[in-house]
Length: 359
Image 1: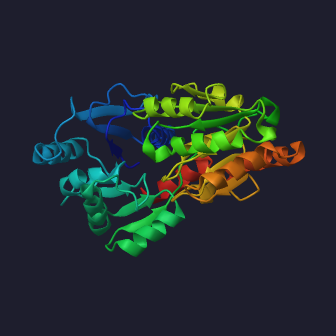
Image 2: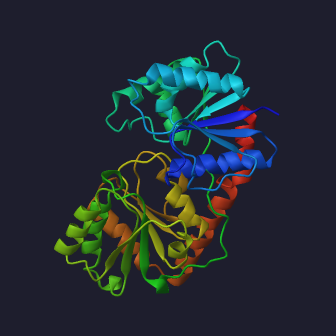
Image 3: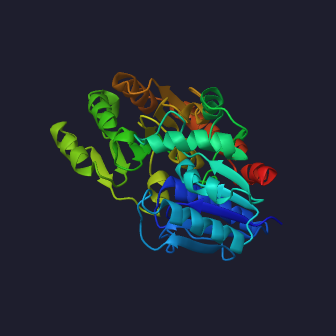
């Protein structure tokens, strides 16, 4: 079997990228593939558990300057790949391909770039745009999370790399949990940053609470991040103290899903929002902004949730109120459809087969 190396940033982090790369690596290891995890810096105390057979290494013990340590990083990476006789290198963030592509030059190592954002989002880093164009030119394969993002890549880049869309699997097996409108809880999960649009959600919630149907309903936001203080101030200024609570992130997030009625995604942009898959695993119908990219490939309008116009607060209010107003039988059917979507389209086994086909 081919020896596989996942090259990522830092597995000590608790983000979605770390979660899904660990999930795919563990599944491949379970099938007998020799798998190595290599962190750019730190990462030797992974937040998510690794399969016992997986070896975990770091290139640098502490974060380093990408420019000052560029050549030494490329050299160390190349030596590592040769020493460990790697057959396939999966680069878990397109930015890291600026290190990995020169490192594999002249070596018989298959290079796969795995994009976790969407092409239109570079988070203000010009190097990310350079990395993507370089990846298209010199990688063997580029994996996008959605068909929409694959189309954008094809339109905006050129090169030899084959483009394949492979969605992330749901991190949870489909739960026997049956949610209920009686819980009167809307749940939102994510880092407390501008990208997640929680300020828009709070404004929408303030409007939704003016409707009689919302009486007794609570909004729970689970996450941590730099915008926490701003969001708490907004909660106070909008007089939402009695109906909104922010909880710290927990690796036992299941308890929040099990006690919720509805999930809400207010992001400005995504790659493939894992929280939607998590929510559907627990049977939660979803109200979400139809941002680029991801929600429209997970949510079927009025079947397992409601898609709202991106960044349109009034439209989000309509979606939330409509969901809270659903008859119990329609709500139950949405819940059933949510679970079925995860079973058929986002189950780990079918997605691992797609990965095996490109190794």
